[in-house]
Length: 498
Ligand SMILES: NC(=O)c1ccc[n+]([C@@H]2O[C@H](COP(=O)([O-])OP(=O)(O)OC[C@H]3O[C@@H](n4cnc5c(N)ncnc54)[C@H](OP(=O)(O)O)[C@@H]3O)[C@@H](O)[C@H]2O)c1
Image 1 (tube, rainbow, N blue to C red):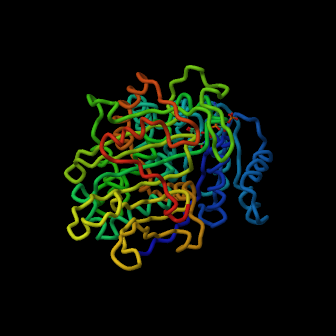
Image 2: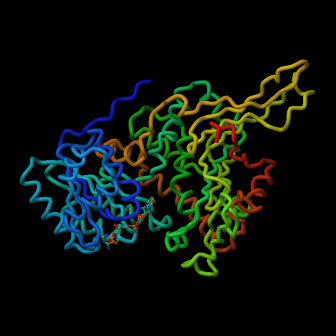
Image 3: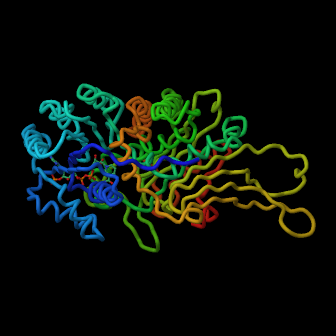
């Protein structure tokens, strides 16, 4: 399969980045934009108008961006620096957008008509006022070129607020103008799930309750919450990671085959899968959901404090720093196949992987040979040491017959001696080229909240179970899966040699 080469926009583009001095802009967005410039994949001419409240002159802003992108080549940097503009002001004030508009008009006079991309990467409480200000200032549409809106998560904090946000968005923008960012969908390894499933007919045949026993997702972080205490305590693991990233990833893995590679078809399939997640309302929640909160422990040989010991975290905080869930899908293909998900902070190691465990078929020939309880497992390791591994039985060399479980693996780094395209680089490029494949639509976001609202309602009623930092979570996580006669697959050394 050949991939179409990345395209450079042929019309001028102005990117308005709200929250340009924030953590995300610093860590990801500005570097991604600069990478696109280095690869000559940005539109030409390109203008970046940044906004935050900090009173920076244009020169100070250019110096600030330079410090972040650390250019290796003077010429490439000089041409990029020329495209940088900055407008200081409160994004909640209409006047700030009037100033941005005036600057844009002034710059546009010197150029031909071009396209516009608004990128909201600031505090979530500013999303609604920003959308209203864009509308008030007639910046949501232009007679000159197209206007698009990129918007960061969170898309609401529950179903009602997500619906409100979608409502506000839809009053200013049409759905095809809106690009909601879920950077997990921009990961090369997550995109490969689609290729793996639909380009390899043999696996697609196996992809159902006929052959698959269950699916597991582990997203574990050894990092804690230092520096983000206020944000994290108001958010928790369920909202931070499950509602968006992990459910979208599950959708990619389990969706029905899209009718084509067309963005609409792929988005439709992902959305349909999320819509078919079995609701938890009326269920015995303890059988489906468990929460954890880390206590003091040891990570990488270093003692680390417990969650409640952090300055800024209320002593009685009920926030879950880890969560384990059992989900299901109402569809003929997936009926009876549980999906177990666990994620958390201060867990044993940094891993993101999804495993598909196949059914153990009764086997006449080898039934007399003891080869352990392991069934075949297919693991997609998204990070670190990206790859795919299938655990298979082989005959151990030697006299007689003894079986051994061995990994058959594909490791990206061994096959492709190249850096992955960073998710943000891919997403910004795709949005500017009007390719919405990797962006969730409003329906899929509302479907996820429908499930997560019940989880959060339960979270408010129970105390999280303590777990020591550096472990795999509380005992209750083990019980959640053991009650079904299954166990968590510990992310192992056999996936591309982690
Ligand atoms: N950080 C991450 O890793 C990450 C990952 C995924 C998604 N996100 C999402 O991205 C968004 C930004 O997160 P962040 O971590 O970058 O936040 P942050 O570090 O707090 O940055 C916020 C940015 O917005 C600006 N700002 C704050 N209030 C403003 C106002 N009233 N008017 C204009 N600008 C204002 C800040 O600059 P001034 O204070 O100078 O105004 C700063 O540039 C959030 O929605 C977050 O959920 C973040």
